[in-house]
Image 1 (cartoon, helix red, strand yellow):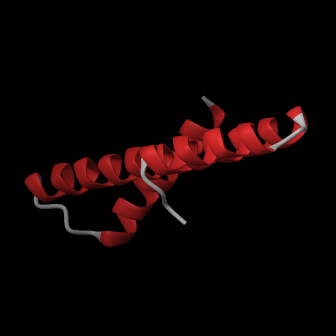
Image 2 (cartoon, one colour):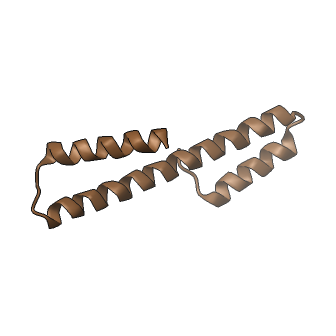
Image 3 (cartoon, one colour):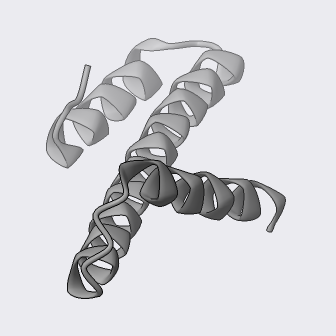
Length: 81
């Protein structure tokens, strides 16, 4: 479930106020950070895909398997790097 920044902050503050466990607070904060990282990764991948498509289209290269190959190579490199 995607929540706004304000909703996430309110949730963290609520957990901090009502929790007697630092472990619970840390787990909630870690969950929110991981969710934000996943969304950022999705945005980056979408931007790269859009740029690759524009590049291929500008050269008249409409070969979908080739575009998919390039995106796979970019994904693999980002995972290593």
